[in-house]
Image (cartoon, rainbow, N blue to C red; front, top):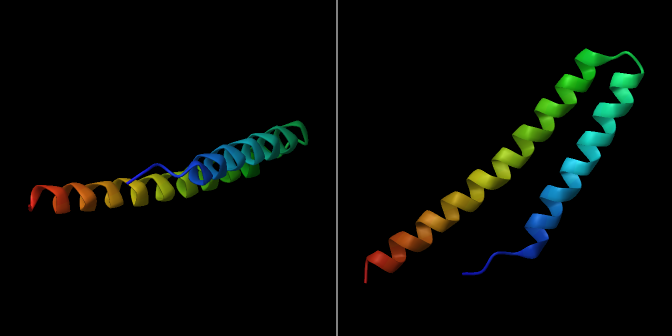
Length: 66
């Protein structure tokens, strides 16, 4: 089991895109939409992290079963 660097780059890219969209929407006076974009980005990253944690616990379960 190794940490895929691709997943880290995906999370970083999502963070950069969300930060840019948040700044653009905030400067345009659309603070509510900026908040919704930020919440959507956080939920996407949280789903990725939960999937990674689930895979980790499955690997630990297999390891302990020996």
